Image (cartoon, rainbow, N blue to C red; front, side, top):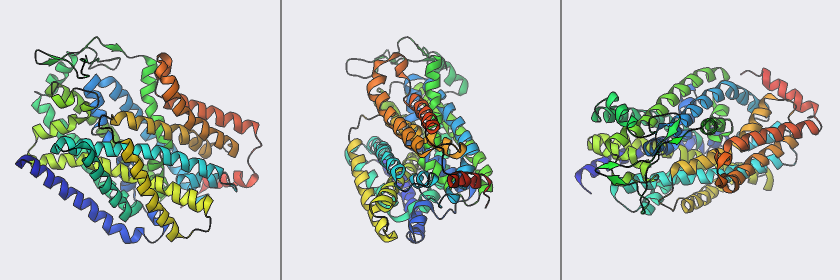
Length: 522
């Protein structure tokens, strides 16, 4: 390990020590009850709620996946996805946050998403609870795998060590941190990590743009690549027999630009629909201290998301200009290392360590959320809600830790392939949550006529369609090549509407509770 790498390592270790310190600080309070461990006793302030929601949502995808997409094929894919996410963030905070905070309190003081859905329809047989918990387990295991891939790529690229050992080391750190602190520690550290993430993005963007000769030079170079700097077309890197982008005369080779259709734009912007079903974000709505603080949180979250996404996209463009022939960046998966390459080459060692801690920050802030929510779905909902309804808090906490380990092990198996593309893994899990929980969340909060049968049918049709579209229909190409979230979300919504209309309307007490939630204040 040379002097530069050693200094980077020291900076990142110091950062990790701070994160562990936060976990230890909140550990005692977290262990007091399952409500404290899973939801922090509904005590989050507006800044922590907003920043932790966005940090846990974006993960290492923001600093590696999104810049990697922009670097590889231009700004169209990345920009339309970013626009969809920004709109989704704002609308979610605007229309869902307040009603969910009210309804989850009125409806049995639910502390997990499956519990809220089950309480909303006054279930005796916990079918909705079970279905929701199983889907959360499946998709969050995939999500956790994407975070472990990020850890492996970060440490493997940075220190020149074996990807697999680095992936395992990163996973073990995340498991340890999630064990000790719970939701409060996770939210507090996520607040800090959101600051580190946006700081890292802005520093790299500023330094990289200057190194490339300024904004005009960056844009001019990007426009020289066919379809690269356009929102209506996409660049097409030319690949050799070895799967690497071809380099001729010291420059990367591109084919003709690929047209970007209106359907493709809709497909990318459909990422915004995912927010309505994203458990790590929805839990922050449920956990905020007071309803009247949500307006401030909405503004904070929206500003953070717009700045971060814009910076991440343009970092990919700057990286293409500066390091278009870099050996580590000649594949779609390798392109996700562009943030690391820029940091190593443009910043002093200690500063680079702090900036690259932003990747670690994004990864930790997401993976601890994923593991905690998945574990709560199994321990609190499947075990405590169905298998053993008289389970004590101590028993639920013990099961939670066992599930954490099992999910983490499965996540490591999924993440074992070092050629995995973070963007692809995240997009599948994002579609799963968006289609499974997004439509039923909106119908549950805003349509009194929604029935239990409609909820069950909607969740199953949305979740299953994500798999069907991704694995069976998407390979056919053409109109089927769109992002699976869009058709699955639409199908789920239609199924909820139709099934609810053809089944008996909800009982009077359920409808009365709906009205009570609308008028609730605290």
